[in-house]
Amino acid sequence: MVNRRRMSGALGPRGEPGSQTRRCEDGTLFYSGFDKDRKLRELAEQANQHLRESKMAWRGALEHAKQAGDALLEARRITGKYGKWGRWVRNNFDGSMETARVYMRIARNWNHPLVKKARLVSRICGSRGERSNVEAD
Image (cartoon, rainbow, N blue to C red; front, side):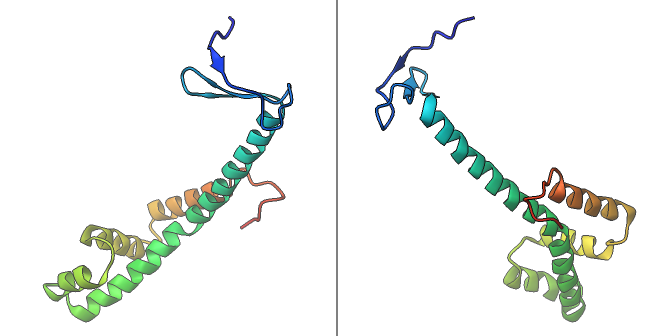
């Protein structure tokens, strides 16, 4: 089937006949020649940068939650369970009370089989598909 989207536009930035970027009537860009290769390199850079950043976020997420939970558990022991604890969370913790509860639960249950499984999954997600040019764990 032939693509019959109508295109308008001029030659690429250098005016080469093999280097054209045009906008289709539906608003999408059509790349060819040099512009296509350049755009694909830019997109690869963006995708790889975000991949590296997401891997770093996965790697440390549960460990940070546990450390926050440990700190919150200690604060709760110091303030007491009722009244003062809730005020302390509202005045000092940037998360909600529910987030505080979840983090404390993670810290208390760090060696529970489900938390261990979540830690394994986070490590796998943080390292899946790594090649030699991406830093390892």
